Image (cartoon, rainbow, N blue to C red; front, side, top):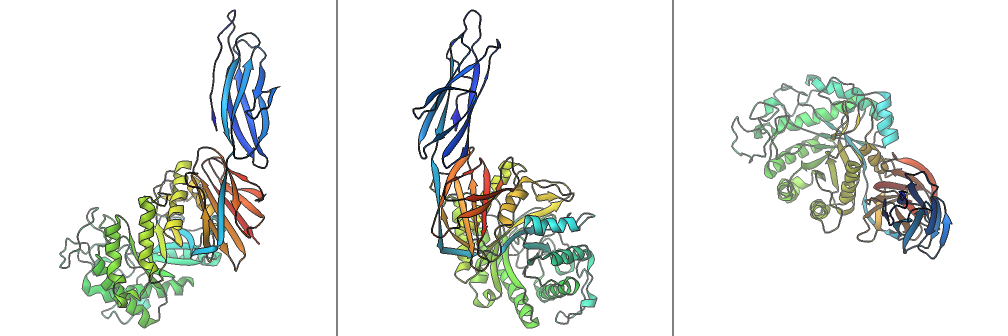
Length: 537
């Protein structure tokens, strides 16, 4: 809605001052389309003010500073209120009211990806701190409030900080030094007890003794060309250590099962493999990653390890990510060991179908789709800690899920001591607006839900996602209102539930439960909000 504030059409009379006035409007209901109008007026002389309303639909009346009026849907109206102190010339203020109802169509007969879940990385505080790493409250918050179903962890570099023995094909678990893995174990046990659905693991670096630079870190932030004949200056895994690397993966998976009862769902052999960083990192090119996958995949097969392998967890320009994927996908022997494609989703939030970001997601999805491999997004962060950042996160999720058919979405840090752009919450329990936006997705879109077709008109800046589950008999619809004003919407589609529970995150609400609504008529999406409609039939 728009309004003209503090509009004066008159001057003063006998030193009397004209009133000052501003008109605001707020849609409160859609059926019928009802608007609250407030004329905030003041008079320097303290005179009693009167209000004459022209509601723009032929209704004119003397009224009060606040009025409520109903309108026909899908029209434009110009409202005018004339404020008078009975002495100076009256003051007119105006507002335009748009009663357009945006129709969002849902087609449950057209189905896309099956969702695997939502989650993130890490414990109550980062593992490179002194903790705490777990607590009953924290674990309950993740599983039962946020709705997390996938936890991402890392395989610590000091796990097997010296070679367990000289034979990579003989794995004696008692010879492995857990190192900082001990900081993870109680947290993982607690998450398992609470009902964690999936644990996935990423490797930041092989241990120093397996690498050409004899260091888990690189010396600077860089994306160097992979050197097939490395020197001590190259932050790379020695090719002669591929079998030892595979043994280390097997030992880790078995120890996690032994210590926590968790079957590791999937493992990434290298996080962001094109990058050397001054922290734990290791550089590969697509051919080297392909060679390692064949060794590790064969070892998993020989040892009866059912943990899936995913790749490339890369970030950056599309051609760079593609170069990490294609050598493995183009080799049937290597390809059989890969179960899913996973990428990191930074700065990919263009929400229109023709945006470069949407097309990037479509391209990345196509790599694995031809082989039946789903696409996951396993790391993102950097969204500002306010409603704008939260809305940017929501739009990024929409883009990946809608155009990339992404079936899993994971944030970077779940929690750390200080709440910043890297984490959804702090270790003391403070929750960001991004936490609540995430909750709109995580808690109500569950593993096994299928995305179904949903559309809103182009240019409406309303972005819908819809999901249905024939087994649990649930329907979930997420509506992102990327407008600075409330929008009226109406759902259209066969066999939709008559009623939904509504949950809203906006500048003023944190995934607030608004009770049950009927969709026989329209309903309101607050300005800059994410609205989740959920129904268990």
